[in-house]
Length: 379
Image (cartoon, rainbow, N blue to C red; front, top):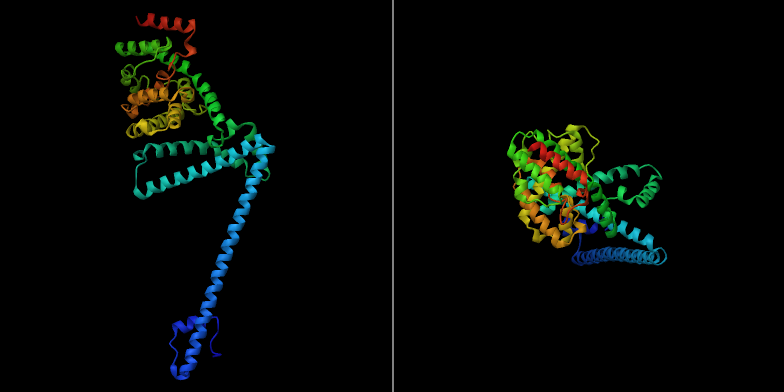
């Protein structure tokens, strides 16, 4: 009996066949019962330890949850404005981590299935596009917060300048509508220079029919009219060629187009043209995926956001107006090819500036005078 260690005896007893010549039947039976009792005791102790640890964890979790609820209730009662900021930040981090998880799953599925990115469904394509833009804005803020005590400076910046520093995950619903309106007002300032740039290009167009078509289209927009899809499609060859293609536009004109997509214009001209082309093609592929999905599959919030990305402030329109405009936009864009990216970008002005009513930027005698001068030159 002394030859066996008690802690290893059950394992040895199970693995080794003991010679019966060393023990009598009674001794062997007694040893077997003791071993069974020892195994049962060790199993019970392990189960007790497991359940006691699990109960302790559950109890600690309930206490932390109770303390968190009391803390939030205290903030809501004593500091309501801070509570709104606090809850918005918590919800923002939750949404951000959820988006990061979804993006990782999408990319993992793409790699495992060897799937082309442009064959993904609309919602997954839009998730990848928007998450990339959000990270470009958020990463500099994260880098600033790395040094010791710098996070306090970051918190102050986030509180004082939420529109410039934070991504939409950390905006309240009221801030979302307000900030989108501010950004759109900056974009609208480029509408007039874009149309003026097209008007300046009219005399240099050699084809008289295309020349007159572009002049009539710009004149209609400047008079407050809303062009049809067929009128814009009639200029496809003009924008796909060397006359009004992205590579042929002046640098100032391309910088005005950057404002339509909220892109920085402080880059060399060839980089600006390349970025505009890439973003336009990406939106064209998104339009095709959206057309396959169907507008009826989107919620009102998704419809408004889709309109906003394509040049019109959907948050200032009704849901029916947004769906009507987006249906017209898809009717226009799904027939475009990649070389016609310039027409796509210019149509963000042509098809949106006077919808649903004429924009105030055309209400000036100067524009009417310029339009008459161009018409006199052509005629």
